[in-house]
Length: 342
Image (cartoon, rainbow, N blue to C red):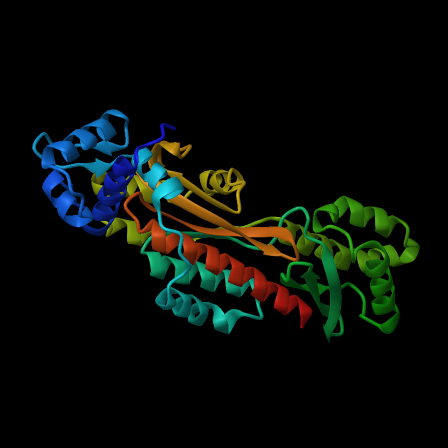
């Protein structure tokens, strides 16, 4: 990307920040007033013309001032945006919004997604803690009837899953002890993705006469393990985009696009950085060519556990939103780790 002179940087930053705040183009005289530059309007117009020819600015109408292009937003985010932490208002809103769910990772992610949608007025995305590296930490068998038990599975990233299991025989002490011995030796400590119906059938084949009794419980463990290994993608606040005024007659097309899981999954999968920002036509889907996507990963015990982020118009307050997303995901990771230690 072409390096810009200090004056061009000042002009580009002022155009971006003015447009983010007002949604209106800005001309040379107003730019001079906002920046305090000691130059003529003709000089600023020439600089703006150069920035337009280089692809950083766009002139929406012949007589209008300039607005930023996709490339202009990108240069602003990468080089001109002021480094800052999350502001006090956003910090308090985030902390208050997720505090009540601190002990439940899945509920915590749900609250985090809700508070991000409310804070940014965008559509908020999140993935549940999970994935192929999820390890089964504990399995509990809770008898609730003569032939009925509740199976509870806890993973290394704090996900708790349960399922009711009905047996063909009474649930006596021998059955419970055998089940615990099997789970402790063959299931606990393994990655959830390794636990399948086929692997449970292999275990059952070694149990002799106990196989028919225990297989329903082992099959339920397999189902629970597979559900924790699969990352779920959730989205909230899509209606915020209808009221943003930035999408016009393309808003409904975007709503339909955001209702499909496969493209959302690909967007998150393609996000490799701790914080990734894709702007306008950088996005891989045509439906997002007028949008910005900001995604941040949250870590649990040093491992990527999931992502939280947003989809919104390109005209968003990057200076405020990016540190807020970083703060939110860091807080989510810490709270999940604390829940695991309790």
